[in-house]
Length: 276
Image (tube, rainbow, N blue to C red):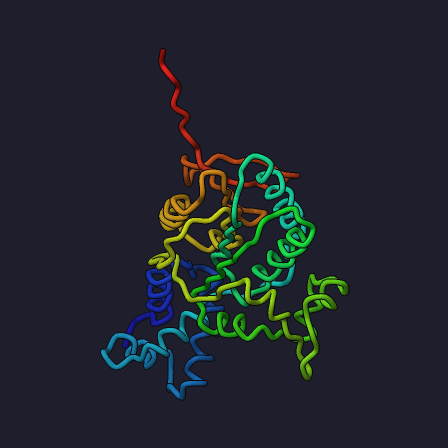
């Protein structure tokens, strides 16, 4: 028997995702582990830990642990100021750069509301002729969250959080007791699994959204993730964090530009001077 099986799983989750469980969060993790034991008919957290240390643990059980460990709390247009600033940033960018397509990555997309919120903003701009076509990649470490995103189905409660009646009427249709995203808008987004610690995304983007992720990680992990993401920014693109997050002491290769009070982190581009 492990002396502290909860601590074992805290270490496992940190290694796999970078998410930290410590202090008061230990109780939250314990509750989540007990829920896994109940649904999987495993007698105790000790037995669950033994299973994870053996060669018999299934990939589905490992994924269930990761699904349980992540915080999938989200809503449409979470922090509305971010989205109005994003709109302004892109319109201003296109004054100086001619782009055939705008590529956006929602790098911790949860159940899809963030990516869909961006899609609604961009669809409106595209319809007005202000931007070219666009595509969005939405990834998350939770298989459960990705499956929900791919379904395009949201409850009455979920669509009441942050979504205006006008956008709901334009982009959603009622299906039973749920609301289904418009297929044309949904098709603009590719939903897929990705672990930022061992990322399998290699494309470059004009906007990368990584909001409310770094707050759960240690400094070393933050540095690694941001270093990797900075390489995937187009030269004039930007990384957007959560309202309470910063790159101070994390990365020196990006500088911040404020758009209506929202921080957009852009690459430091070296300009070569012509020497006569």
